[in-house]
Image (cartoon, rainbow, N blue to C red; front, side, top):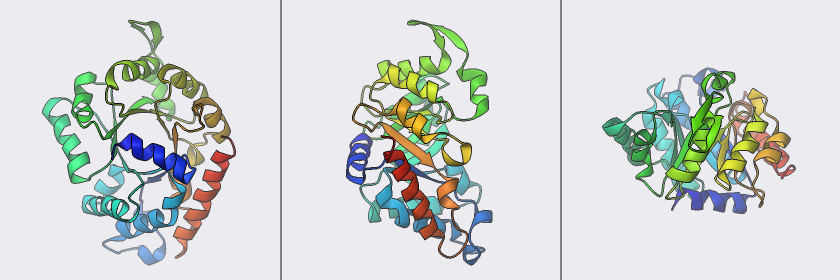
Length: 274
């Protein structure tokens, strides 16, 4: 199924714009999982099973797996999501950025090895660094635009001359993706919840293109401001990510139940602003 088709179905059927980020840190796991060779898989699988009906997608961050030599557990986790929750798209958060044959290999890694439905990509090396991902028309290509970290302003907020006049670099990225790179309708953009004014500007530039919005919860982004700035006319258009606040809501053997409560509260808070 096309990533965008699955995402739109999840928005409607789950009545949810919540994306749960899977950033497993074994140092924060409950005591009963400490030391298990499959601890990362066990932790993430229980989070997924407890929250799948509340989310529009999951977003495993590859670094949290690779740092612990747990790529095999990432493969198993995505396989589990597809088998147990087949209508829930999976975004591999890898922020890849390279050119030519190297980018082709990263695309194969994401879509053939891990079987992700979408991947995050850094567009700042230009179109030829993104083409290998766009060559998979049914897969989502989610490009960094206005990131949630304070240092994002160092480059993304610079003013540049473009064919459409002078604008900020993140605005140029948004317009370029919407106008030139999205021929298969499989592109989305990353815009941080910490910058609601920029969310509104990106929405103005890209129409109904989906936005992946990190930065609520631990990073302090405001849900109401995010919805006001970024939702589309039908009340969707956003994948609002929460990671740590959901994953580490509980510290005991009932950690998955605690995660579900926070995920449900977050989904409801989002829906209250739609």
